Image (cartoon, rainbow, N blue to C red; front, side):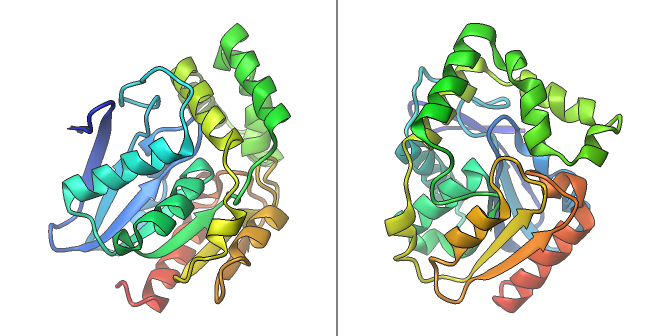
Length: 262
């Protein structure tokens, strides 16, 4: 485990793989930490140099006072990749991580050779939805939202399994201020125009039972980028890397190969 001091925030990060490996960056969703990617890492090709990190207000990273802007989250990621020498990377972003990917690709295309936009959108929800969610967290903590979040995150079959508790526990142990701060960042983001200007290899991944970013939203977003691809993972919700790790890993591995990253 390592910490990177980026000025107004210190980010917890981890790098796996050889120093000369093909660089891959994973950015996780709202309410999760870098462990989100644990289920798929053993299924990825050997020899990759993989960077994972906890965004501000999540996991073991620091939690500056909110609200946050998407620009700040993009800047955090940019500074971290510069600090660690990650350029021309294959970037996988899920949910808010996919929004960070879109913003970073527009700002610093040199950092990214291809991206996976998983369970995300150019815009997610609306101001009223996020205002209600922020108010709920401020008044009752993340616990007050946890059961509803589990319904959006996972299919009915997964919610009936004992493993659900792992992910519910991860959610409620995030910082309330960090969850609210990143919710504000999502609320204020509309990337339709800027994402439509992008020209880089892009794969969209959606879960058929995703209650947060439905497949149509993901497809609409990646369709903004000419030549993009789309893959639907059936019987999975908002976190298909958890519910269907083998299929998820296979799909992004195939995309890595198609872009010449490996």
